[in-house]
Image 1: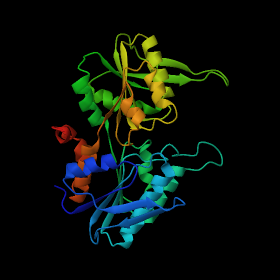
Image 2: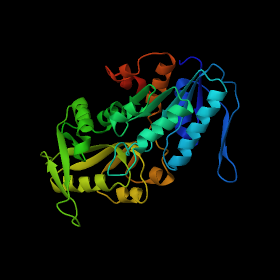
Image 3: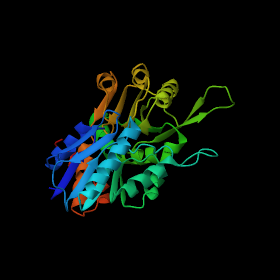
Image 4: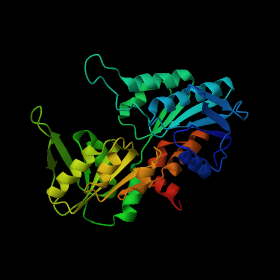
Length: 325
């Protein structure tokens, strides 16, 4: 369906890359991405890519620096092999949380990473649910930011068949994202307002909105330590919510996050496979992973065909993409 394209896999998430290639009905391009004894990265493309439309699929998740370097070196290899166009498909864009100066003498690392990818020779970037939308402007090349919300809407409509749903933003910064989901499923919106009254005191969570008797859906783009979502779930249940689910695009789940979620009062945490789930995640009692491969595959096909990517999110197109998957 996608014409002549070449799909290359980094080491961060081979199962996702294979699922995308299967959706596009395109064989993976053979390449070696390995390390020397001192962990220096070496890349060798084993097929002719001259004049081809190439796509490197790689999430810059843990270990973020290694996976970022793989993208840069694979880009250089493709550029020197005369690929016609190189697109970095970054389902999870690491360093996205460093999108501004948080204090004096601190970096804006998301901009630095964007510069590295651009100057390495990428012609285009495709990613999913950037932590901050303005990061698109950090790139001096075309950048498509896909949204996982339609995929989540499909899942919610299939599994949470209730007229008593309420979407909840776990913090003030996520209100726009939560409002968009609430509109799609025709549900009201609530907000968790976190405050630390004074230094040394624990956070106080106030719920803006009446959640009594509601089936609440916490929505966030990234879950890392899990503390915010678990504490928000406690606050919602203490305020009378009947049960609490959480939907997050990127399951970073570092440290003891999986155990924290497992011991929490969350009914279920649903994440996508933008980051390869660990064995602990796969075996967790209340964590479920849904694949976002068809969405990314469809976007890659549209880029290759010079078709609209934004129209993918109009008129229930995503639902038709996932039909039968």
